[in-house]
Image (cartoon, rainbow over all chains, first blue to last red; front, side, top):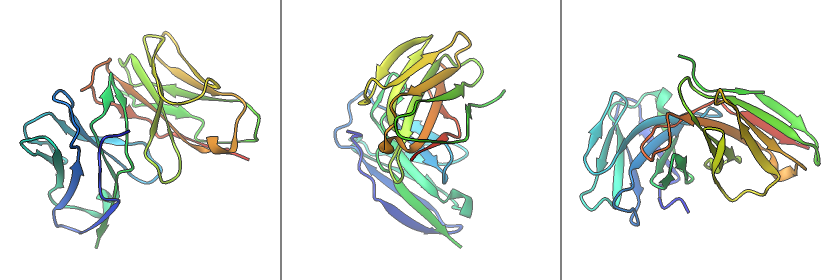
Length: 109
Length: 114
């Protein structure tokens, strides 16, 4: 059980912000929230992770609710190259990642 | 610094055969994990190696086995191949054990079982 729920697919207009939600209502207090993405037939690529506080890096921002039961990955200005499957992962045991089925994001020109 | 590499890129086998897939971890990484990704699904954890010892295993039968070598490269062996073993096999390395160590994935090996 991956412990996460994500919408199967989303569209976003090029240049707009893409907001990808993830529910993880059974997350434990010491479990991090990770986001990876997988462009077609390539290996997954790390995006960002966080525990409680909001995080930002050069790729994205991660917003985690105060109760930690959900989070949102924000790609501030989506480009066509951001079209990919995005995975939210919370079940991680000693670097063993348990993936769900992810959200297929399509960026539309 | 080289990333995670995997070989071969593609492989076709027939049912009942055996296959060996190879992975070179990122420089300095002592932990390697293997994943199976069926079409349309997320990667599923197979097992993990840390300093040449198996450190955890997912819900896969014993015909899936592995090795890690002193240079931290790794092999995944699958015996008695079945049609359902057709998938993308991903290798990932990380700096060490620990839940917030980022995993670096290789490009994968696409296995087709006929």
